[in-house]
Image (cartoon, rainbow, N blue to C red; front, side):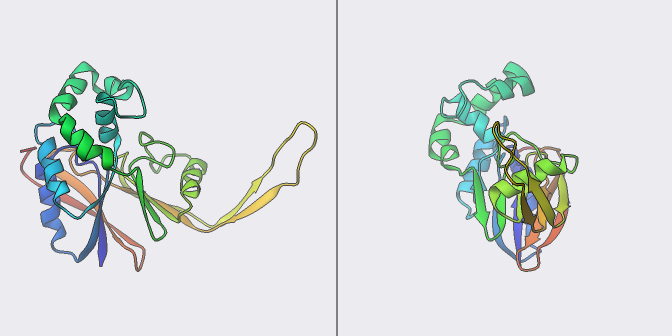
Length: 232
């Protein structure tokens, strides 16, 4: 029995359908979508319609956050990250791809993250939807992000990479320096933790990557799907 973990659909309906077809060979108990469902594509609304009719567990991604900002519903006033990523063309394309009604009735309702058992499913990190965790991220930063969540396994999708980074058990010593005295150092024992990148479905045309996770055995299996269509 598996949980299927998807991210980075980016409005690519053909990629999503190809992955769903591939998933049918496995016994899937639940599907979690770790953000970036939409994108600046002409099939973004069709992707949302498809997902809205499903029973998938879905959280907000970077593209959803940018869409909210464009419509004055986000945590930031201006879409600076989107502008830096693709300029005025990206802003125009995203504005035309997702309607105001869809933003209000679906995108704005998505959670920042989803917790199940000892797992957190999130797009970026516990700090920001924009932060991309990778195997090259400083191990102390990775430890901080998973400890903040108070879980043993953090699944993320922002980087688009498929990876499993394991942090072994150990100890962390905390030392504070105050103006008038130095308190005794505090030592905290840490259990093994994992950060798993689940891949991306729609970023690369013709190739999709997603992850299968067995909550009973903690087994992680990365899946690659090749398909011949584009976005339509």
